[in-house]
View (cartoon, rainbow, N blue to C red):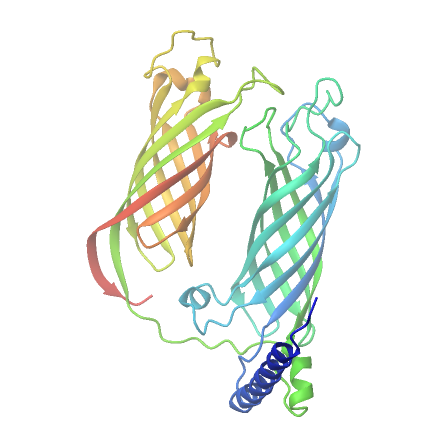
Length: 404
């Protein structure tokens, strides 16, 4: 193979020229940012130890659920500065990031679940050293020993190796110095597969966490070679900017979904039944961050052929039912955290209980179109099925401009 050295040398020349220009641009940026407190990437690493109890919901696995659990967490996050995004300021400059979770359960029937997740932490009260924070985390878990009538018959709590992981926490952090914080939290952890496989009673954990946090700015070492006298801050100075006035208004929110579920009468290897839903919400956007609303739900569930009684010639009305709900939407950039508390109004689904909950997340493709995944429950908070769907919101009534 013949090498064209002229092309190679020309490419190397342009790379060197580009590097030199980049260095000049970098030095110029350093001079401009010398007095700035927002230069760099303000990262944190959290390490946590969890200890707590199972919120028991099963008569099986007493040797595990009657004992405490332990878990560890490691996270890396990015401290927002609010310079470009209004939501950073509205949430009090939160931290966003990714994490890894590993639980340790007594006994061997359930396994040692692990999870990869995204998280958000924001302050309730921000003091000079002491802060009160809240956190949300959601992701996917693996490492469960699923129910198997032959291999693992005692594990009648969860029927899948892979499940959804959700964690909510609130607690305190105290800054020992510019780099190190200590943390203390109360938290709730939930694992579920949304009845895509049965059994699916779900696993709920309540506990306390102790941890440490390390703050760093990775450009600090990079700048040392260019300008040794320039030392970027480890933590940003969080300055609020004046927000635009918010126009309170109303929306009509339409949503349709499809999915599948198994039933408790055919656990382990039963069929997956088709489900679908439609809803219409009237929602009032009271703030940049939130909406409250009320709406109607319609559900179609072919699993009703099997439970609570066998219906061989079931028609559309036998497999459909209605409900109504009160809703809240919490907006974070293009994401919305959706919670709905609903009431069944169809008599032939009394086995589902009087109430249900729908909890999920929407991603806004634009201000009107969104996609959503949500968990729908029955009998209060027992997982029923997962909805995967698309929706459209239509602003139709506007109010007065208000400060945020």
